[in-house]
Image (cartoon, rainbow, N blue to C red; front, top):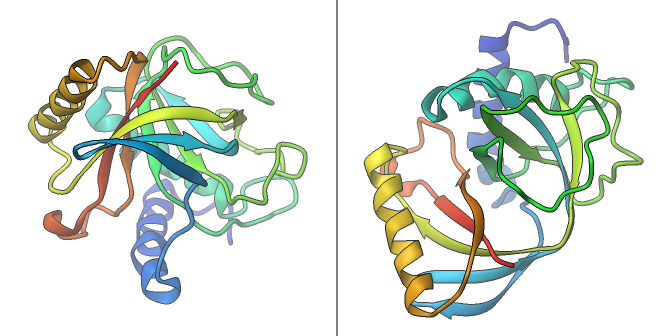
Length: 209
């Protein structure tokens, strides 16, 4: 794919890919995990290690995704050394850049302080050794080690009120069960914006010690 495509077009192509892939393959690949405990509609998950491409955006939570998509889409659509393209995976995650997650150091330049960190998960067979180096210095590759997360899944809009409602429900369930967490919440989106609101899969993750 032409690595000089404008950001808006890359973003539209990304969302189109996200929309049609489930129709072609029934499901978009996501990181491997096991649910080891349920607290009502909250799942405690153990994730296997996976590799992400990420960018830190100096923007609000509402704007970070739109600004990050063309940068990260450029990488997965071939803007890298080797012109390699990747199959789409899910979710696209977003969190405060200050989140103290246990991760390996990025293989490119260090992330700037503050802002929002947006990540694309790379396919399961990709490792830091095999992933091509990004041409855009803003893109970083990172290995996320095996991690435990408490997760609440919900549908509906990406509005702040919907997010706040389900984050409160997640925290309440964990407090009642005396399950401690650490760090800031992660917002995980599995669908493009034109997916009908009632069909969307949204999740909020809280890291467990």
